[in-house]
Amino acid sequence: MIKALFFDLDGTLLDSNKQIPASAVQALQKCREKGICVFLASARSPRLAETLGFGDREFSLFDGGIYSNGGYVEAAGEKRYAFICGDTVAQCVEAVSRYENVHLSLHTPGHGYAFNFQTNKDLMKGWGIAPENLRPLNRETMEQTAKMLVFWRNLIGERELMPEGLCREMESICRGKAHFYITDQGAAMQVTSLDAGKMSAVDGVRRRLGLEKDEICVFGDDLNDLEMIRAFPESVAMGNGAEEVKMAAKYIAPANDEDGIAQAIQMLGLI
Image 1 (cartoon, rainbow, N blue to C red):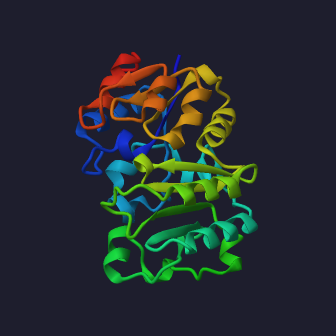
Image 2: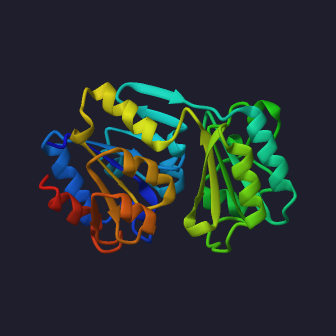
């Protein structure tokens, strides 16, 4: 019997307008009413009020969250950061600096962000970042990086693929030292600590709840969800997801824009 659910956000729980569909809200509310715990497992930082406009309605749907691909956990009585090795961060920053218009952000405690380029008010507004959230790109910040995001220009609306040479170099730098993911259909790269990752973070919450692996279900769509989809016997890939994720999942739901979450929860017999 499934007792806890873990949801990726972008491409999974959120539709293309970056909203939780009404059908999904109702389904999650019914799950909560039946005593099923509901958690986020996202690459996003916990600043969902600023970045997605989440309010009481949205936050009331969840018992906690896994953020920054497991770089920060706030669930089951735990609040924990997992930092990437500072030397690895520094090497990645150096590699990115050799590519014009390829940018990166470092996610740090206290909702802090450091960038390798000059930001502007429009970008900060679009990302929901206040001036006090900005951090310098220095060694101290690199030593406290929970997640690195590498992207073209301003990220939003970009679909150009990451340079192949940079992908290979980043993967080489991170091998054995950090988790490395190519996401957003090849338009971005993400790095987290070896102590992070959605799979290990979800498993940590599961163990704190005293649940067996088959008593939870995980939902995802992108390659940074693949490890968690493979790790748990009850897993759902979205119809709009990457082929590797769909091949690994036990179930395939309709797309995120087609009431996929609500239909998947019904398919699982939870409501």
